[in-house]
Image (cartoon, rainbow, N blue to C red):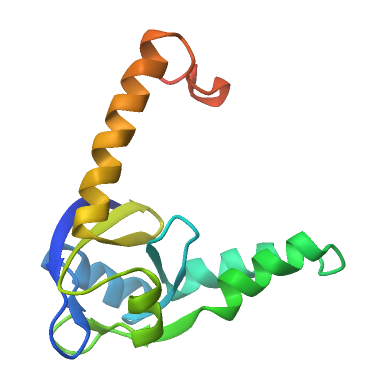
Amino acid sequence: MLKGSHPVTIDAKGRIAIPASYRQSLIDDCAGRLVITRHWDGCLLIYPGPEFQAFESRLLSRGGLDPKVRNIQRFFIGNARDIDMDRQGRLLLPSNLRMAAGLESRAVLSGIGNLFELWDEAQFNARAEDTAASLAKDAANGELPDVLMDISL
């Protein structure tokens, strides 16, 4: 389970270091082979290889006749790149994906279950503040999504 938010630095070569707490499990689970792709929210998604394969299979099983489905397939799969952790636990981020997410030197790697999101640090912090305020307002007004109503905090 990938969880927590971790500040990371993007070095001059476009690499990030995976936090040490995840390295061994990623080596054990997927031999350090990951897949990175874009997300329309403005971040990058980093999946362990088998997790991306499962996502890709589910997405492709939806067929390709509907233009909206095809566009989503094209967006996620067409932007996907295989990346391998090096011996120091670093990932080389493709330059086109770094540019698409506005990543320069300071970023946040956020684990959300079966994948990581990689955000520009300023965007992540601004979004976190906006989300916290919005959720507090929605909770106070009883307007949380129905799928969350049976979860106790």
